[in-house]
Image 1 (cartoon, rainbow, N blue to C red):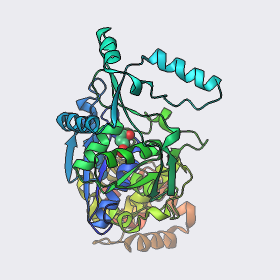
Image 2: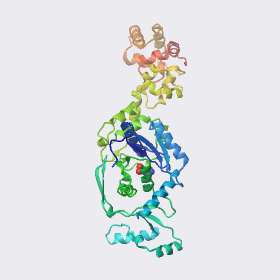
Image 3: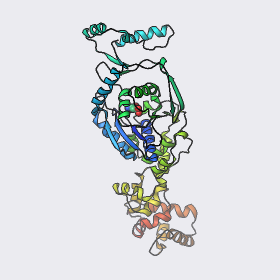
Image 4: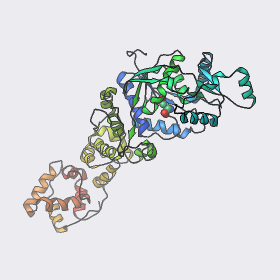
Length: 450
Ligand code: GLU
């Protein structure tokens, strides 16, 4: 075991064969949070050995999504640059008698499997290839067969203490020897991952529960390569409201798509860090809050239910609490940075940051006012308080209008809001009035576009 006192080295290892979605970003987030909390190192490893399916655009997409979420990496590695290391590790396993060539075709393997099942026995590979003589192998290769290579498991119970799942054990005697090298010489992920975890001195493997089944064999691979076995943490999978897997719908739940829809990056992290844990899901103003509170012991073992509605609501609630400094640059990018008072006035009335643009237009124009009663509005205009205006001006003005006209409540406020904002609802008028300013207020009360 790796000493728990040393700072952790963790990795997020996506395959650049598609877009990141909420399911795989959850693994990235927990790795990153753990590294930050423990003063460790977070490595981005691109598992791109599948040359046919890996694409540069997905690699760029992964980097863009992680950067957008604020999950910065200390180091980046690509498996496609590391083939010589896999070859060397393969040769070590062969020399140690732990990797052996097999010649069965997929059809032959399927036949064996069915026969075992028909006999009511587990469909475990029978290791027939271990009994082949050199002559047998020469003959098979003479027929043009290329070997695939299996890792020879030790028939024992493998145990590990999972940071999420607690004490785990698998009986490797009941497992088939896994194929690590395909007949075309390419490697399976379960092997290259172990070689890299050793090379990069990974201390904690934090990943989705779908990899639990690989863990027993991988622990034996670490041992066969005489390396320290990392600590494992397997996160429960996310499911939708109906309890089904999310993978079928990953298109609509890709990080790129959520960004496009105006979902706040912080809301995605806040939801994924707390979903299925003992802690309440609530908006956060920075990732630091999540770093401080993350604790594998608080992650439940049941699948976590992900809801797009919950995410959208959390995203809005996140905006409602964000300080001006956090959004200033993005507002400027939308030509909607009208200062801190503007942001504090409108943040409670937006669902996405894009909505701020509409309120910026309400404040700085031009809008066409909606007039309910021009005579009343003209009377109100004559009662506008003297400059300068602040947040008390609205109260002073409307009190004066009440005294002069007898109007109160909706009769008073509704026509004024409609004329000044052209909207039925919105931020507090006391805050908007000084932002809109005298010139536009007078114009709008007079029915002019301003
Ligand atoms: N490339 C693997 C995946 O995306 C990595 C799994 C692991 O973290 O070990 O599923």
